[in-house]
Length: 330
Image (cartoon, rainbow, N blue to C red; front, side, top):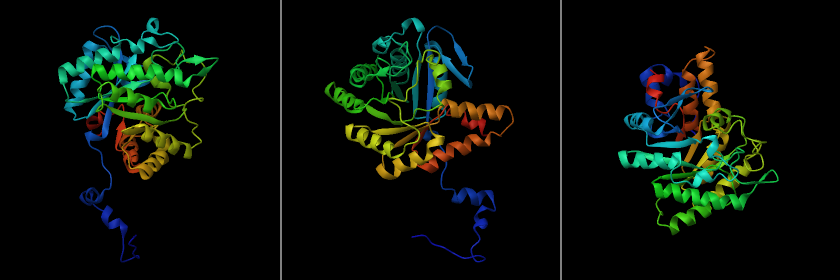
C-alpha cells in the first residue's frame, strides 16, 4: 500500500537537504560484491597491450595475468571473466582451438586456480566467435549458423573448461537448447556443482564493436548475427528465452547489452526472481570513457549508469570499470 501525504505537511525535499540524510534513505548502492571484471588474454610474454577502442583496458599475456587478478582480489571482487584474443593462425571455420586444453583460457584457468585456489571465482565464455575464422558463434552452412551441430561443440568446450577448473560457465552463443545439453554433460561427468550463467538475453546490438576488436573477431565477421541473437525490438521474447534456460538448468541469467535494456532487466527480475547479471558492454564503456575524456560529461556518469543497473534489479554487473571504481569516483 502506498502511503501518501499532502503539501505543506509533507515536503519530500526535507530528506534531501543534507548529505547524511540522503545517505540514510538511499535505496540502492554499490559494493565490490556487485561486480565481475572482464579480462582479455593474449599470446606471448611480458605484454600489457592496450586496446585502441577501449581506453584503459588491456590484453594481458599469461605471465602478466597475476597483476590484474591480484588487483581484483585486493578490491574485493567476487569473480573475473576470461576472454581470449586468439591468434589468427589458430582460427578456422570449425573453431577447433576452443577444444584445445592448451588454449589461452584453459591455461589461464589452471594458472589462476594453482595460485589463488578459490579466492576468486572464474567465469568462462562458452562460444566459438573468438576461435572461428568467420567471427560467428557457431558452425556455418550456406550463411546460416547451425544450431544443433554447434551445440555439440559447445558441450565439449564447456566440459573442457570445467575440467580445467572453471567455476561458472557462461554460454553466450544464443543457440537453442545449449544450456540443457551443457547441464546434462556436466552432471554426467561429475561437475554437478559447476554453475551456469546463461546469456539468456543477448540482443543483436551495435554496442559490441570494441569487444570484437579486443578478441580479434571484428575484421573477420562476415554478415551479422541477427539469425541467432535477439531482435532489439522484442521484449516478450526475452521472457521466453529466460523461461527455457531456467527449465534447462541455468543458475543465473545475463542481459546484454545493459543500459539500453533496463526494462528487460526489470522484467526478468520481477517475473522470475532469479539472479540477474547485467553486462555493461564495450560500446557502453567506450562511449562513457570517451565522453568523459572530451569533457562532454563528468565522471559522475559512471556511478549513475551503474546504479541504474541495480535500480532495475540486477544482482551484479560485468563492467570494465570494476577494478577502478574507487579511484575513478574519488
